[in-house]
Image 1: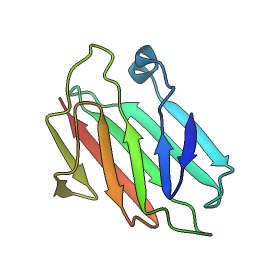
Image 2: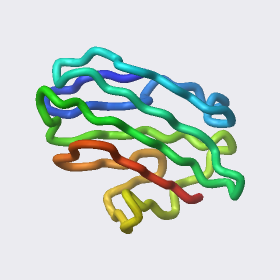
Image 3: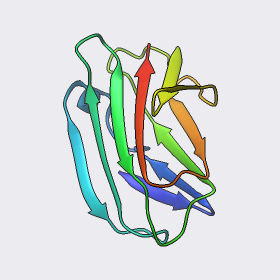
Image 4: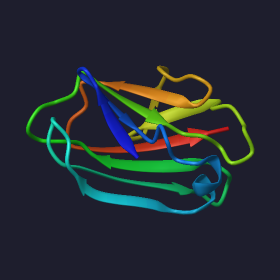
Length: 108
């Protein structure tokens, strides 16, 4: 469900594509950076919403959130805490120096 890669925290690299049709909730997962909680869920308009409570012990340089759309669609746009975010690829959103709660919306 998540892994550390040096100073990067990767969330969701092994989540099966079909799971993104449902709500995925993980609470207080232990990491080097500190406990991490997240919820990923589909929205009624086809977007995918993710809420991440970032670790408080150490701030990862990058949080790499993997979002694998159930129908293999590519990410077309992302907002983080209501602001447009440009650092994304087909199935990945990279967030630098994030702390606190992140509310992310990916549209396809």
